[in-house]
Image (cartoon, rainbow, N blue to C red; front, side, top):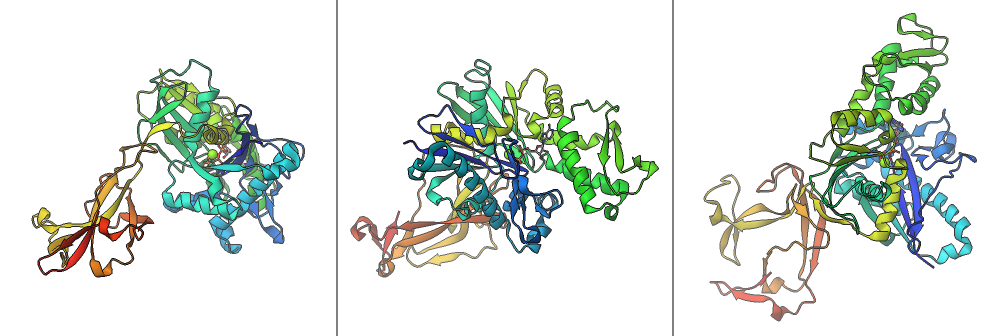
Length: 509
Ligand SMILES: Nc1ncnc2c1ncn2[C@@H]1O[C@H](COP(=O)(O)OP(=O)(O)OP(=O)(O)O)[C@@H](O)[C@H]1O
Ligand SMILES: [Mg+2]
């Protein structure tokens, strides 16, 4: 029996699951049946959880009138703009339910996995129990290491074994899928393509040079960009528009939900017009709200015409970040299927082919399973931050620089040192290759009498600043601790030295 590879796309607004058997890699299946959806199918399920009235509901089960917890994913990355994240998510509801974002994300992922397992049970019967699994979980390209760790914790809370989980970035997964899904010969060796995953919460952009089409080999060309400017931002703007027009406390919660649902399901997805076209008119249901002629609100319907479509403009800005000489822009994700976005990007980048691959809403999960099958296809990536460790450096090399920093005397080496100096071994914007180690000299002096343990801990530090600081400062923070256990290395292999006072010490390199 083969191994089951499961791609999990935990989205801000919608999530999806695809799976494939590693011995039938060409036949991935996207899960399309969900509790609460009856016989209707959908490749994705709303990323919603509700604990209203002591009852747990998720995805399509959540009703229009429940207290629905949304946008949880954005709260997993505290480094993203807190303001935006909290505007789009249910911070208050979390507090009321005394739950953390990681807990709720875990609960939600558990349901996703449970639902996927039910499909697998149907396909394989009892044999499924003895089959190995690998879960490929996707995260936005802009996620910090901390946010990725929070996602991992949520997945472990969902009952997935840590060793069965691998993470891959969403645009990378989408790119893998696109390369297979687009028509043959549209991309040739050496072409540069930009993949734009325009989702509900984030818009992620990544650029690859296609070294070879077959077998697929990619290299990242510029540092990927993105941010919280997904389609959900438009929902927030729509909400604000309602507040502006009618007044914050004048719309009953159920009416607001209904208007929002209409906006999300009818107006936004079907919007294809040119910005200049003012003719498009929509009537938004707002039951129970008093008539107001001034704003064309009558009989429970608000008239919204083309003059208000400036709302959409914001969306496009997020997707226009790339200024490379590119061959093609590949649009995926929910808002990536927007006709409007397609036309706007086409207009703004004449001469570049803009493509919307088939099944682009499922691109991320399908790319994730593909990654599980093929392994890494990206030869070079561009580092998104600086990574390094701190050390103390011989003070004499600094010619009196950093005069305010107190020098430290090392009685073993009999040298003055400048503490807190950074050794950055990965630079933001620099190339990194998976599988090729980065080597650098690093040594420490240990007095012989202290050499019994030989276990060391060093914090691994990161910095997001454009240029890397020479010393530790408040833009440098720790992401994890590196442990080095040399206790089983025989002492005679270390370099034994003696200083002028006769003190013996090891120089551990
Ligand atoms: N044609 C369309 N035009 C604009 N927006 C659309 C369209 N179709 C769907 N959307 C929006 O796309 C979003 C869903 O996209 P998707 O499933 O890719 O996002 P997600 O995976 O939840 O978010 P993210 O990847 O940012 O975490 C929803 O907000 C939906 O309203
Ligand atoms: Mg997504």
